[in-house]
Amino acid sequence: MSVIRSLTIERLTTAILFLLLFAMAVRVPLDTDTWWHLRTGEQIVETGRVPQEDSFSHTRAGKPWVDHSWGAQVILYGIYRMSGGGGVIGDGGSVGLALYTAALATAGMAVVYRMCEGTAYLRAFVVVLGAAAAAVFWSPRPQMFSFFFTALTLYLLHLYKREETDRLWLLPPLMMLWANLHGGFAIGFIIMFGVIVGESLGALLDPHDSRAIGWAGVRRLVIVTVASILAVAINPYGVRMIAVPFQTIGIGALQDFIQEWTSPDFHQPQVWPFAVLLVGLLAAAGVSERRIDWSSLALASGTALMALMAGRNIAVFALVATPVLSRHVNDWLSVHGWQIRPLRRVSRVQLAVNWLLLVVVLLGALAKIAFALNPDTVREAQREAFPVELAQHLQDTLPTGKLFNSYNWGGYLLFAAPDVPVYVDGRTDLYNDAFLRRYLSISFAQAGWDTALDEQDIEFVAVETTSALAQVLRERPAQWHETLLDDGRSALFERVRSVDAS
Image 1: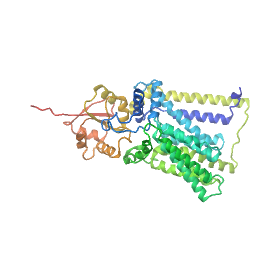
Image 2: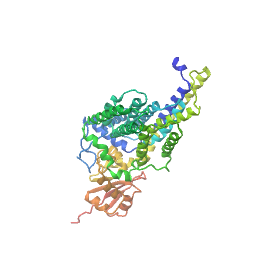
Image 3: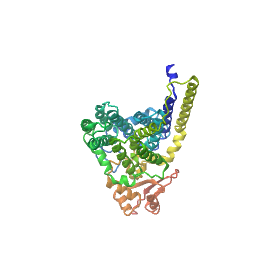
Image 4: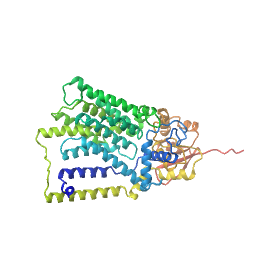
């Protein structure tokens, strides 16, 4: 009974917040990279070993491959199988993948909520804004572990700096686990380095700031960071894992052509929450009487720059900026006496209304989730996003020659047509910058594209029907025969080989 009677308006606000966040985060799995992660997880489970070389493509077959997401891939595949996944789109496996995404997204924002200041109403407001900005990052991929672990790293540093609770010893094992789940572990070090730089600046420029951890605190954080770097090497690939983030950043083709690696387009509605969060943070820090501390300044400005350079970093900025925004808005409200005092007790009528509201919101959230995960809805959305008929045709006919495929489809093809080696897929760390630029020159039908296909003995081409390459291949019917598919988006061409009359 005490639990029932304890549903104050503030607790109701918090409960509704996370119900809505979870419902918002549930979405149909439409990321093509999800599928190569699943295929790799399946291979690890079946073989009992972590891959050391590529076995999915014909262009990199046998080449060394550091699979930086191997642990998350096993988890993803396990969730996919346990929820009914069997290699067919629209099956129960998609439900499991969607719930996995929502669970880690909500857990990450729950950690952020604990770092925020102010009443439940203020916290709910800023967390919703942060979640709306970060949502562009949420998809059923190993990167969701990076989202959650980024929030945990920030929280451990928050405890150390703001609540005088030392849990820094957890960072090395956290980083070791992170390095075995996803290559985004580099974000953890960016956060640590940002705090080290910020606190060092504070110790130098404002040594009397009571909010700073001081030189002794900086030294301890440096030691923990070094230990965390060493802990990253505890994985199936050893010290090679440490180099993975640097290798990925060095692929210039990502920044030039891959959408999530380019600067955000502020004409797109999904980017607007990021713009509001960024402007709101600047405004709140400007009007607040509380001066922003050095580590918050270093982290917020650094991650804002990262987000402005590559859209995939917006989620990192959202995790950093949301608690900072709450602190300065709370300070501004307190100075003006505009705080809403929480009610410790509620009347029986208010209690009944609170529970009624909670039940209504719960039912609404369940209805939204049920609609989003309806098999027919999932199947229709995935057929619009993926070359389903093309993959089925390739798997049924098993082309005898080498395939050139669209980068956007590679991940799905190696999952849905597992017996057909792909030309390229989303494993950008495996395909270097020179390779990806050559792929792009072929895909865009730039000068020398036909020679490149000849030199690589490409017999089949599977690309978008409206692509530049598809259009030029149609202009050469004597050399390339097009197989007509009914999906309206896939084009499959086979090289026409001349027959020796003799």
